[in-house]
Length: 488
Image: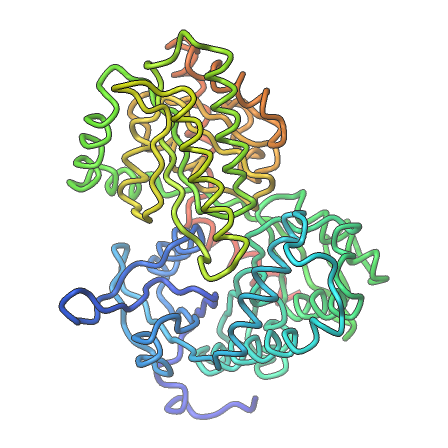
């Protein structure tokens, strides 16, 4: 893109962040008014505070009819952390369904988490039209970022939805610095090869259009480097860099994001959170111990095995009947996809089965809620005696870090070895194999019976790990590294 006058760039941002889901969604309330709601998910929790602390524009998909009406222009939005600009992109419905539903959610998500594909083996011919839609939406994001970024600006592209956008952005705006952040795990080479060869090459080439390809923990970066080697690309492990097909080297880096303790504790002290705490205590009883999980309702979170682990705990420890309740806040996710609707039904049925088998008048062993309420989740974590986080695989998992910060009862953390957060929290938690139901049951028992002084000591360690790189520092570290990489 040729340089032009300053007037032509008026309103463009030095920093642009792009992700499929933005920081706010517009919906109509019961009175027909358009109301903004904060977007759901861990990415918003990380990037909202980070962008507000720095200033800039967030480019995202228009996800509702009200969003689509506001698409195409930069609009100022006031987050709790501060003001930002938001630019929404309206995609064609068929393209968006292919990009988000078929490719991102039903294919790439399952591959990166090393889960069985819901539709079985991938057929290149069947995937082709959906892959074309994925390309077109990535093209739209690249154009949106190119139009939003100031000359010499910086663009940070987020997650597996936008794997092709870095290469397309480079073609449009070679003057900008760019980084792509994968917030999920990255598949090992053998698992990555379930994708057609042409798709694998295009995904990796798309990412290598960025100056930096970023992950949350070293093991996911190592898996990416191994996949690049399998594709025959030059990999320099000393420099932690890969040479793309255009001859450029892209750095591969890790930034293990933490939580903002101050902002989180302020939110946890709000009236609605305190009210939720009182409501929860009223529902279970003041003397009842709480085993808590807070998750999206999706396969990688391993909620079914979590419930089976609690059921095994009840089977092994009848003396705890009536004294412990498992509160599960598993809010609906991607309800338009069959695999997710099936999971919701299975979780609901299993919770009822556990209640029917072990419950008695005045005591329900499992309380299941599926409504997305951030304040309710904070209240549950604050009141937890044990917090269970047992994903099959997870890029990081901020719930584990949020829970230890807001705890009012010196909670014990039970954490999957396959969560990226285990790299930061291993010294203070009980690590478990996410596939071992018996081990989870034993870990719940250990968490409930851990002596008070040991609970306090472990929680102190956990809190240090949880806040090691809060969002504003995470962003500044990434920008500093990007400046060095782009200037090398």
